[in-house]
Amino acid sequence: MTLFYYPQNTPPKLGRLPLSTLALAAVLEGKEEYDFVDGNVQRNPLPLILSLLEKNPIDVLAVSVMPGTQMLNAIHHTKEIRRKFPNVKIVWGGYFPSMHTESTLNSEYVDFVLRGQGEIAFPKLLEEIRGNKNYSSVPNISYRNGNTFQHNPELPIYDPNERPLLPYHRVNMDDYAIPTFVGKRTFAHESSVGCPHKCNFCGVVDVFHSRWKAETPERTFEAVKLLKEKYGMDGIEFHDSDFFISEERVVELCEKMLPLNIQWWSEGRIDEMLRYKKETWKLMERAGLKMIFFGAESGLDETLQMMDKGRVTVAQTKEIAEVCKQYNVQSEFSFVMGSHPTKTEEDIDATINLMYELEKINPNSQMHPFIYTPVPFGNIYDQAVEGGLRYPKNLDEWASHEWEMYTLRKNPHTKWLTKKLFNKIINFRAVHQSYYPKVNDKIVAKWKLDVLKIFSSWRYKAKFFNGAYELRLLLKLLLNSPSKNESF
Image: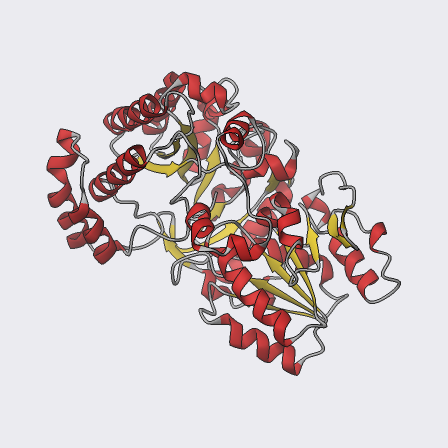
């Protein structure tokens, strides 16, 4: 029997469907006994996991691990599980172990790393664990073979159309009906896997190697219709790395979704959305599109080129804000601040100024400034390594305070981001989040928003960010922010 564990990585009552574990469960449905524990729902999951291991013939624990809070929870809980149940095989999958495979396996409490996708590899691994133990025949896995690491070849990207629909009936769907900007009962779905782009600060590129496959419009519509009719969904978040790659596919899906009368959100790329026809934008608006999340990343074109953002420019970012406003689509922009090794302060200042410009273009836009934290590839990462960045050698080191701060984006270990510049970003974020609070994911009382705006107004208008201690305290008290749940 297999136990899937999805460690907590969100604030209370904001957990989305654990799509990664449900995808593996889908290919096991009817063939393998399994159970779920979701740390976003079960806020004290370890006693439950230990009880299930005690009472059931569970021989494999499969843990899904993103960087950030989820990684830290996975480390602490997996270590205790191994101590009490040494014979249970522990498999880690997800972005963190796929990027940091050897440091994961250097720890005594992880037996296998499943790199990338597991719909084909995981059932084969279960077969070998219970049979001949010929692990060299299992694709996409890594494991220790004596004193060396064995990294088996990866399969081509898995076609999501070949996977059965997710086994929603195996979880309590009411736990995942989240009130958001797009609906009172918002669910998550992923209609494609991977991403064809090469942005060198993004872990998706490192894991999927710029490969991408999508569900057909018919397949996606089948899932959306099921969520609507059986589970009362009135809003959906498409958690694709890039939902809008194929305009033809989006048009066909939107035409099918028109009668459902639901609202939706997804992520897109600025340059490709600017190529969409006017008729497509009008159709998406009629089909319920309410918000698009864009990676704007920087206010310097030089930095965008350094990031391998292709044809994306600062001018295009301003243009897409205008387009979204025209079609009543709210635009979200994320920024990766502190990534330029030699023009760090210039890049930070230009990025802040761009956010101000975008908010003038469309006051309904939302900004998400993050601090650049290297992923293990690309020219910026190489410069971080030259400056002294050295990843931990095992999971116990990753769980130390120093690397906890790294994975939570509070100490990126880049030599060029000095303490002064780091504080500049932190103080700006406090001012900006107070004046333009992010409220997509939860209902926030109007009086709280009013208080934040009153206290931050003078700072925001004067662009005075130094020592914003009062705003940091207000954010913590009123919005439980800043969050400790950021991943890469």
